[in-house]
Length: 223
Image (cartoon, rainbow, N blue to C red):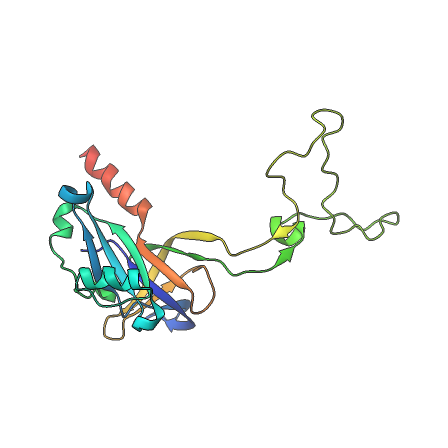
């Protein structure tokens, strides 16, 4: 079985619990996930499953991409992602099998990877959370400046990775331990609570929580 899903961020909504508490959630569409390829330990020296997401027409793909799908007798998909699995898990699925939202369960913790929103060129206060300068009688037009960046005589240069103004956003980010509030397997939707990266219609990769898996493996090792 696949160790994750590819999804598209639809937007946000809210869910009421049985106790009457309101929970804001992100709606993620995972309805078109299909197995389009497999890696085996005998041939590729590792086991993995390649998922495809998003229906697409042939004219939107290159001949090389179409050739790979036809070679595997797999349906055409716009987005591909490889997920590592054990040989036993890989043996349970075949190319062309659909992977649905019920891969995850209600209340499960997941890690979500996506591209953050682009916020253009920003200063140090918004980009790095600098405090800025205090408002004094002698301070003029300097409230949001970064301050001095030199190293005096030695070494006479600015160190790499200095926090300065620059392009903010459009970075690959993984948010860990988000809660699956609900699963709609019929419509292919996941409702996830927490900071899901990216804008609406952005592509996301959802995996079971790494920290939870490590915690369980440590418990098993102690036993």
